[in-house]
Length: 545
Image 1 (tube, rainbow, N blue to C red):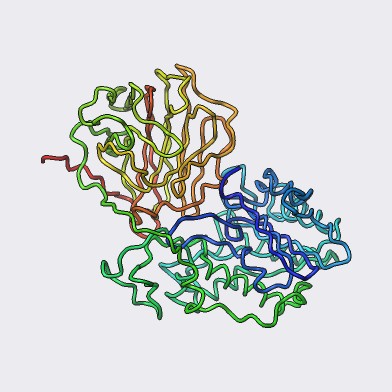
Image 2: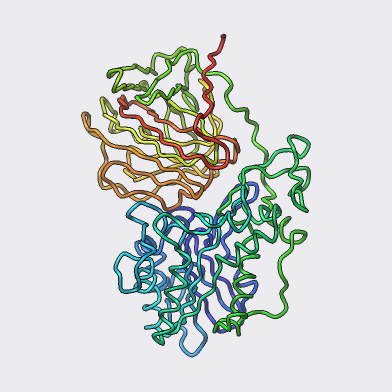
């Protein structure tokens, strides 16, 4: 189970029960960020006199959620955790709050649903919500409550026009929030009882009304001393507390202040819409405030990392130019057990042709590793803005491998930090990766220093001579990882890599611990988000020049 797969279970003297399902905007987290993520499902009990069972999972869509343990728990309960199954509280108010949409928009087939079509159209968002949640709830005597997805904060254009695209869940495929509205209207017209809470419109209005201060509803990966840099003076509040200034805004995920604000919106909408849940709304709790709730959102154990982005490239590793002309630079770093600038246990050799360039990476002598507490790699990378949307693909051919070694790995990676030819046992920054592991998984990474794994992979790609296509797609909502013919991995990889270096991410391909791999057809496609990412800065000034 991924460490983000957290179910929260509030207690109350009330006999009412609210089960909540949804994505990361609703779910619980276990973050170590400066201002951690908290979904609004975690704050519902503040405003509703009910037992709240929050089963929402980060990275899930209305369809992919059905493959998770949380969906099994929803339908069958979990006696070991004292979690009742949906509809097992007869004689008392029972509700199922349904809040998907953010990941139904994603292109990968494991999560995508079509915003077009009605509840009778298989594959549509409306059909998925109806078949997987609404009908099972009604069959068990539970009242479904449909929530449209909360808006993504458009920090660059926090106006009505700024939410006419993906920030307002309007994509090239259609309008996901409107699909939920239309579904609720159609069901009620057919005398099928459901409630609708339009969180999209409510959060857009909230963001616009708060102006620049809307950012303080959101998670931030890192912080810097308030005395450095330029403070944000556009809003009423600075976000500075105890001499620290938040860095690395997450426009999708809320903090505790934002989760509380959105839960307050749920309660307000329930009353305004005369929802069946309105009778559970607490009367003695006021709207959250910056002064009271924002300070409570800060991680009190956070320590500012000591880090400087690389200013020069390695003098040892040759630069690699892919078929598109993009320059990649090499580095051996992490827990290596040897000086990477002189060791013969690391090698990078250009091969292929000018039209189809390839690069063979070799790590021998038990150097580098992926282990529980530390890592070490030979990696070729390029630097991108942290808010860039990108897709990195490559084909890896396995030339040699110590298949009995549990710490061997190769693949693609996107990291929060980068060191140049540095042997250090210290824990480094977070990352997400896809590729070979001794125990095959579809994706893996580190979050808050903890090694995490995606679902098990059915194909391992650990035999010499095998070729595997690798892909990482990064957006403001997180990462989709593809390892050959295995299903895409998304669950648990929706964290932003801004804790150490809030301005950049480092994307590339790597090998570690007794493996030789040739990487070819390396392609990096970039879509700018905020700052221009068309010409990412490479640290190609070599040491000594």
